[in-house]
Length: 513
Image 1: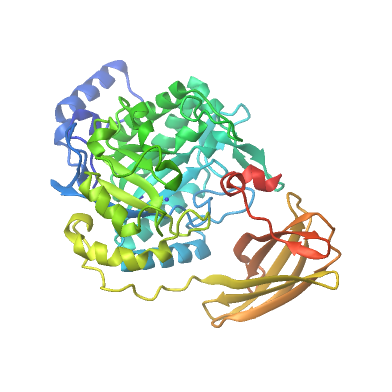
Image 2: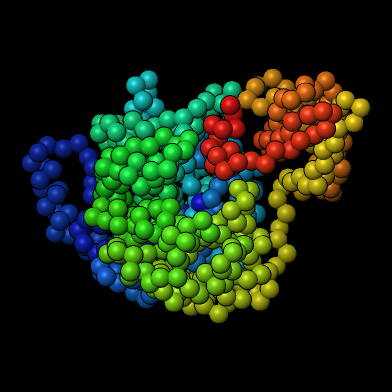
């Protein structure tokens, strides 16, 4: 769900840039001496800074600030890099237009910071050799990253770049098309592979971005607790590893961030009581997520200073559209009152049913206007008193209707191609987990909504099907792909639409099996 740039960490030598060049031992000693002496004087841009231990706030140009933001967290789960599903990253023209639209809407709604996931579960990036050692990043990765930063700059947004989620190792499977999800526990358990991940993947990313003023912080891991034996003892589908090697990765990543970037290093736990497990690793602030399920065990309304950590604390996730306990503005007020350094609603797109930003904007804008000096990061004008009409995405569908008549599936849906032109919408129906599909195509004129209707015959009783949608231009180039817009089972001549379990929402392996 990360802008970077005129962000800095603490003002000691560890946060100064350090050169990495092949050199003789004598030259290396000379360079190291120069950097130790002059490092604190080097002109890193400083927007965000971590205060001394014990202080609960982050500083913007020396003044206390509150990071009020939104978890983006992706336009698709493969926004950076390319893979077996083809390139759909931020530099892809359609994805670029979509993120441009999303960021324009967020900026107009008074949002100043977004959290954006980069590698996520590893399905597209980084690259690996035959032994499972990270080798680097594909040729689309940096163009995607550059496009993301350009859009953040265009809309005056700051970013927190979330590097990996726990799905990087808690899940492990391959989709029919060859996309592999997770499966990288050995990068934590094997010190050589762990070091290679930092040296061949993280450091090149940090060097590429340098001191770009859009990136406030790097969140090294999102909710790693789900995949750690000591922190998540409940038996479930997740693969788990010990805490010690995960701490080792976080410590090495934090050192790299402080060496090659003025941005801050952080990590997000899945509950507040796990925060002390990450002390002593060089993090500049700590972050945790909160949802209704955790309230009976870790109540939200407690002072940040009581959470047992030595740096500021940010509420990294909470349901943006409200919960059984608090509405959005109540969470933000609570976070301010209890000394937190920020709070990020989950999530902009809302597809996982854990919160949706669109339903929260009416509450957020009045709160943002009232607290603007603390949250605006010194740049944007006061937002409007009421939410502006959101800009439409380049492509969109809605009002999806499925029925079963005379042995055939009838699909009806509204489709909008925002820009004028001729497009072809193609619906694909396939058994879940299998590449073979039935398909039908219909022409669509851009610039106005249209209703599509197709029929699929010869469906098997009791088999689960997935329906997907592709939009193509006049030259049959894919412009937009919607994977699994619907899932259903034919049973006794009727359509049964199963509700996704928690595992199916969170674990892609549960959806491809």
